[in-house]
Amino acid sequence: MTRLVAGPFNRVEGDLEIRLDVEDGRIAAAYVNSPLYRGFEQILVGKAPADALVYVPRICGICSVSQSIAAAAALANAQRLRPPENGAHLQNIVLAAENIADHLTHFYLFFMPDFARGIYAGEPWAKAAARFQAMGGDAQREFLPARAAFLRIMGLLAGHWPHTLGLQPGGTTRAIGRAEQTRLLGYIAGLRRFLEATFYGDALEVVAALDSADALDAWEADASGGDLRAFLAFSRHAGLERLGPGPGLYLSFGAYTQNDGHAFARGVWDGGATGPLREEDIAEDHARAWMVRAAEGPRPPSRGLTLPDADAADAYSWCKAPRLAGRVAETGAFARQLVDGQPLVTSLSTRSGSNARNRVIARAVEVARLVLLLERWTAAVRPDDPFCVTAPMPDDARGAGMIEAARGSLGHWLDIRKGRIFNYQIIAPTTWNFSPRDGNGQPGACEAALVGAPVRAAEATPIAVQHVVRSFDPCMVCTVH
Image 1 (cartoon, rainbow, N blue to C red):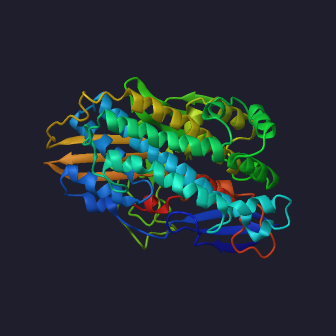
Image 2: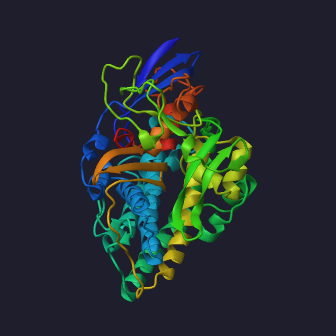
């Protein structure tokens, strides 16, 4: 057996190191290390509750809106507030805009450049993959202006991005009129044009309606063009459907709150069946983290303990190990669409489960669905109605904000005592997916997904490892908040 230490990884958000045990040309075990500690949960203790809206967006510059929405939801839960319909629409629009931008950024800037690496130079598709070359590909030059134009939504509705203060427990501070509503629709239409001409090479409605793995295969073969078709071809030849299997348990907190629930359902998917999510089943295990360990073992986040201990025995990461009823769960777009019952993702799960290829396909399907929702939410805004409501902040209260960021389930748990934050706990999506082993020795989702991946001769950071890691799209700075 030989040992490799892979990292730091480029084209992921934050610091990441993975120790790999290699036997007979394949990974026998993986140990994921988040080597940075930041301590936002400690920073918040003693602050006024509303200060969370200032601090938590600064956890990350990529998914800051997600952090804002989760904090606003936790405060709203503590205040017993419910945003008016306009406020809910605008919160959903801003969050969806960030998530769409994250999905497309992941595709064009983080994931696809791996196919243009020299290790694939001898492949028959290498010439086509040059379009996605890091720092110099035509695909990036086409994508970035479209992304910038689309993110003008943030300036219009949130004031600026990242780290907006426009998202509040009771809605949004920004009310829009008819002219701005029309401008929003124009920004969304611009993204639709880019997606249909360049990303999909087809109408959004066609992609959103794909209902099986066979239908996806037929769609790929039916026409040429579109960067998603290029991904489908490259990933099939590179064997990504056989890389990075998931744990079999998938989690979604529910995405985009609406009067009748969520646009994408809340729940768990376990071995072919969808079931309810029980918040009381969530607990954080510190057994292999550089954290003080509670005497009673793993705690629910509502009573979470976050005290650093750089000398903790047997630890190898600053990341805790969240578990669902003691089990490892995967979160992200694949899990979200699976829990929601999206037919294509459900069919892909039946055919090959969660893997490096299917995670990217799920994100692409989600983008199509989200743009259609953006159009609907924007058209539903009634400019003459309220956009925000307020209520007094209680001196003593608890609240939870459980939402879906691009990378998966994000939870904020807030405890207010005597008008100040007594405890604030966060579980980010990458905390779920990149957790270390727990007290029972169970590896985290990514650690387990890497087992069995091939290692070519003389590879320092194996290309298969890079595909698997980037299929989860880790955000390590959120992980070590």
